Image (cartoon, rainbow, N blue to C red):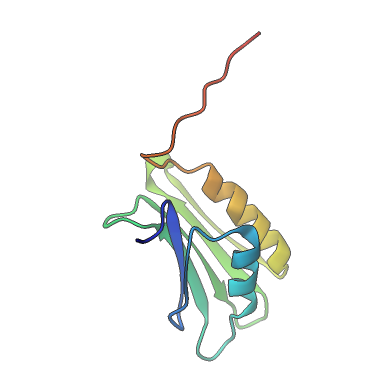
Length: 109
C-alpha cells in the first residue's frame, strides 16, 4: 500500500513507511561510514515538495538536512545525539503539509 504520509529509506535498502520517532532512532543508529551512510525521509509521492536526510560525517556525528520548497526552508546542521535528531525530525515533519490531512483550526475564546 505504501506510506500514508512519508517514508524513510536508507542507503542499504531498508524502508519504513510513516516512521515513528523510535523507528527513526533505530534507522539512524544503524548508519555507518561504509555501506549505510544516509537516511532520506520524504513524502511518498512522485515530486515531493520537502525532504530531510541524515548522513554520517567523517568527523563523527551526523549531518541533518531539512528542505521545504513551499516554505523556502533549507537548513543544514550537525549533531552527535541520535535521540535529539529523531525527536527534532519528528516535530519538523509533523509541521509539513499533507494534502489528505485535515488542517488545524485555531479558535480564540
